[in-house]
Image (cartoon, rainbow, N blue to C red; front, side):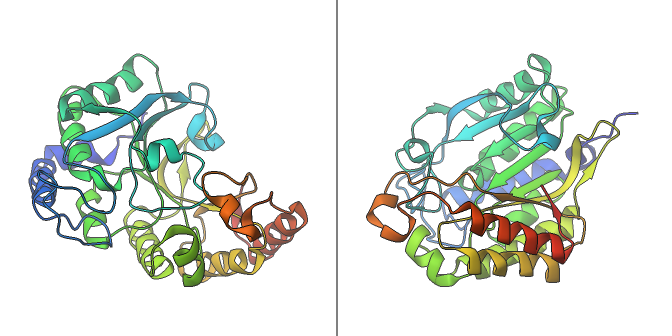
Length: 300
């Protein structure tokens, strides 16, 4: 028996259309993310540089995600242009900074979701850097669900979210996959150009955990609901990574899945920052991983 994604029940109750209408109000007074600039995105752009029209850089099955998302047929990724963070080491800066991609209507976005399900057979719809396009996404899910979408949706974000926006997604998103980039506010300021990253990210993860809990998988080890956290270790960032792991252990469900990642390499503006203009020391990575194991975290 297949497990029904949560947005179908929300659609059936008539609540999904209401969420769309509420989200669209942000286009004239945008407070979707913690920057809360109140920008009228129909006439100008805010920190994320996005207008009211979604930009998609690419879509298709992706085999490079976590195994519980990829399965045999891939995770159905939709890469959105722009971002509400300005990470100096971003490996996708052409998309996140310069907005590489095509402007698409919400109807076209719905068609892409259906194609990922029907044509490619992907195990999920994976929304990459979605925060600033939540209104577009909600309308696309509404349209696609009415046309037969029945695949779990993954919200794949940088962790810098507003709880109020996440509550619009409650009953729509099945799997949350946020980054938890830093435990240190100084790191957030220096490397992502926001003053309050740890505070906002911790609020974000608590709310996501409240909505979906730990990560659940089916008999084929495919995720269908829950929270999966990513943390990319930075060179010299062992102490900060330990702080990240401590937070997860102390404040979130014991069965959240944690991907402690070691694939950092200097990109974009990282060479302007001597301490991260190099590869990660794998000895530090192994020490952090061992620490997570001792905490009893569910690591991959």
